[in-house]
Length: 503
Image (cartoon, rainbow, N blue to C red; front, side, top):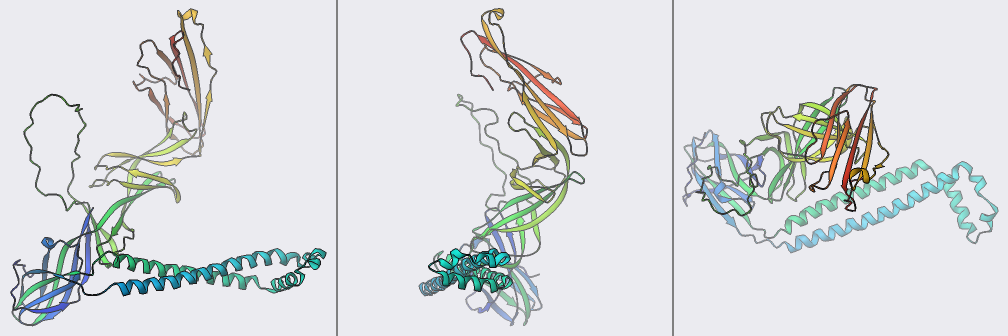
């Protein structure tokens, strides 16, 4: 292993320009660490290996180098050099715009041909089964009879297979020109980012003898980030939930990452590694602080997720999804019903994070088997903690909510008070083929006015209703069985002081 001594390179070392390749990129939440590698033959003595055309967004104080080889060499340091560009980009941009206009013209011609072909296909398809019957007297008497007869004759003799073949070829032409336009747009984006200046880094070597060395240069570069994306797949056959984690990577660093080992890290490279220090806290008059108002979540040690294979990430801001890992979770399934809002049962899985790392917060796509259900989000979930994931409506559980008859009581009997009685019945039938855990959520109105009262009864009975009025029944429901859940409540108020009632 060659050790690195970071000091300014001596001026007498010879420059050797090297063609390095990016081999690994560690992507953080707001930047990336890029590693370039080169294997090259060096002479005995001092040599500067020059890594040219590095991005302007790199941080010069993040440089590090290491290597090995047969030359008995020692790394003597790194030298950061900014190279001012002299190339005029205007001609390149103009040429790309001309090329793009040519592709736009080709797309318009192909689209016109596609429209014609589709019209011909429709026309021929309508004529072929009953072509003789189409040659009506009205057609012969038309002003453009000759043209119409010619079209009919030509269309009848046209092979539909040939028309479809020509249609597919035109559609393929459109896609080809569109891809070329996307390439041109990426190049224009890169050229439009500003200066053609670049950074060069010289890595100094002091070799005891001539030989071959391999050197790896690493640096931090801005303009890169990744965000987690989860796919939650419920398997009806065994009732398990599989979580697939992918990272959506985007970068505009100025250098393409082609065929690289990609590592997604949860570390925040921009944050200090030292622990925080506590400042004195002086008691003073309250300024509206509430307990729990300012809470800082603890951060666990950073986790790195290497990609299974090599990846390509262009530098034009294209969002690239990279698969990271997959695992089954321990889950408890619940069919949740909020019939006051929707007469349906939502299949919800309470997942336990059995991994040794926290589940990162990110967007989530839910699937029932192979069928896509919808989008949601996954919160940060620590190891051995639970999180609920919904898989949408399960049509195998039937839900019907019925309003019972309203009753207005005699105000005189209640000492000059009026009241209104409400009743709701929710009937649920399980047709899933197996027992299910059912959670039925209901609600009664609550009041802060002493003159208003609410009295409720439930069947089956529940315990004390919470102060916010929202409660639930939870029970097991066998396959093929039905269960009724009844809520009745009575709202009373002083005569003439009717409140706004919850319908």
